[in-house]
Length: 92
Picture 1 (cartoon, one colour):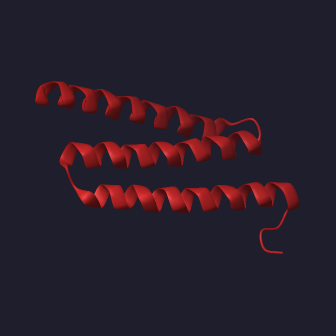
Picture 2 (cartoon, helix red, strand yellow):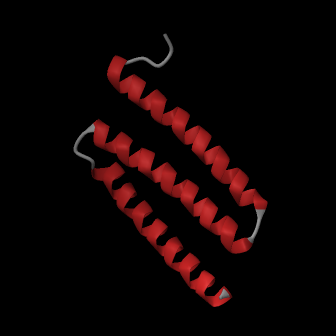
């Protein structure tokens, strides 16, 4: 049973890394700013998932705390970027 879990975690790790590569490409060559913000939003979600998968793999709590920080910072940064694109300013 442990071998099956290890294989599933390796597969999940590969899928998350592949998704991160696709998001990085979209951030670099996105046709519009909105596409780049969406790709950046997906990239931080993938980073959070990567931390969660590594936390399960290595059975360490620090990865889960890192995932929580990535989620909080990513959410706030996405809101700030969208607000900047809509209004041209962040702080009113």
